[in-house]
Length: 137
Image (cartoon, rainbow, N blue to C red; front, side, top):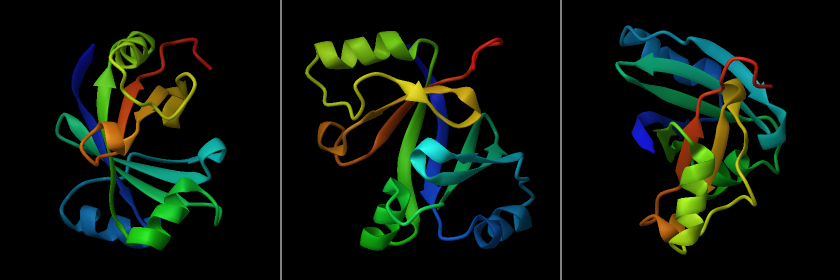
């Protein structure tokens, strides 16, 4: 079940440059992590009950690099926090909603994620994310 807006993903060319804006507003980068499977570095900036996720491509053929090439820096996706992403994935498929992966995969921080195709979500890339449980790899 969806519990909240977890974060807003923002595609940037450089985390080091982009973070200055958020830090000047009193926010703090909590963690920076590379997600090799996605070809991206991720900076997590908590903001109230949600977060801002800065996405910097690490390869020219990554989805974020292609996004930047087509659209430039900006909002890349909206992430909804789930308490059971496998169940939410099954519900989406059962409703005929187009998802991007055969099954949920690992994302930043060990979370389990699935993406809804923008054509099924009013033009928005929608991510569902379930936080990693203790003992998850």
